[in-house]
Image (cartoon, rainbow, N blue to C red; front, side, top):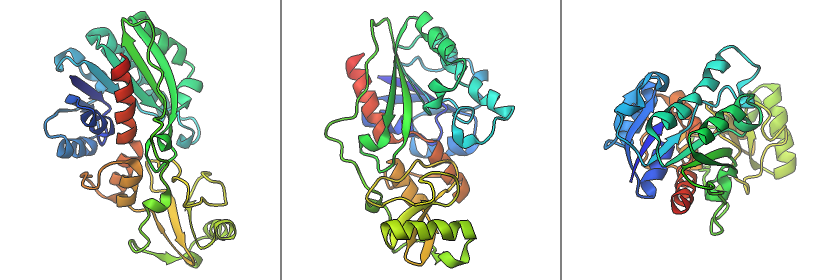
Length: 305
């Protein structure tokens, strides 16, 4: 079976698709860096480095499965305050309905943050468009940590099945182990610096985390994730974003979680190639779909469709 991957990014959907035996014929993304990463790991795929809204989907190989991760910037609370360009981000979701109208794949899966459904005022109309095109639709709010990924990452997966009475409801596999951050962090690696050398807010977070968890723990270097108390290494890490935001503390020393560790926290294989500088690599990982998560939801959808 063949799939097309829209807003393909670093290739999380495509890697998951490959794990369940799908061939990704085409991948579409506007950022050259992500296309380079996708091509390095999926050389068999035809790559289109352009705005998906300007691409005629009928020129692509006709797929059995359509995969898409429209931009989440306009929906996620991590974006900060509302700004004009967030409307442009939200509009990428209409590329999904355009593809469905012109190509009519049997199965489609769309991934986004939970606010895509709960906060976007046009979400009911977007869903109604898919239903008007003959798709039965299910909405599934799932955490990647329940799918064998060492990261708590809640995402909405919209499944559409054309011509069906109902779309499958996705569930975490019973056999999945809930992995821990301690299983990923390498305390012998990285560039460490004294906690005392950082700003007051960072020192205060480290002190609060140490009081609660002991010498070793995770904490957000910025933002509100895990508050001011840090995070136990016996839990999965919190959601990775497009900026390096998690720090690991070991006694009086600390460092940022590395790209290699973030790759593992996302569930990409160790040899998965990431192009660009460190900042760009973090951005690609924070934007991606976790491959083990993608593979399992695809497996369930394919079995039920």
